[in-house]
Length: 182
Image (cartoon, helix red, strand yellow):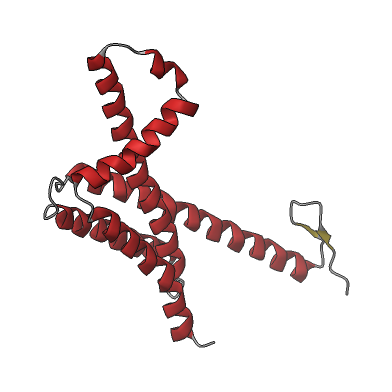
């Protein structure tokens, strides 16, 4: 498979996440709230069961609104963390890892900004700088995790290579000693 084909195949997961984000951003306010509401009900039923004991209507509304806010922001962060990792991985053609990380972050932050702009045209939704920042932080963490994995794999390869050159054994940390025999 040639480089161009590999690059295009690597972009497919990124584009799929773009589409999913766009679809969810197209839901009006009531559709978006009902999605969060399902998760809030689940959390109250199975995780935060003590919250069901609250009787005051004002407090119930406050708890539900707070949980819905937390669910929505966690979803923003998580989806963009996935997007950041996928974008970093799809840009393997950029050998400079710092540049690859920054490019992945710029793409994700740019998409977050355009997604928020798109939401400003959806009834009951708004464009929030806070969401762009949450999305960008998620992307930074996702791309950062991938960067650390790549660096650790490269370090492992360097250690193996050095061991091969000196004729020493190399233990990969999994109790697998790779002895080099001459």
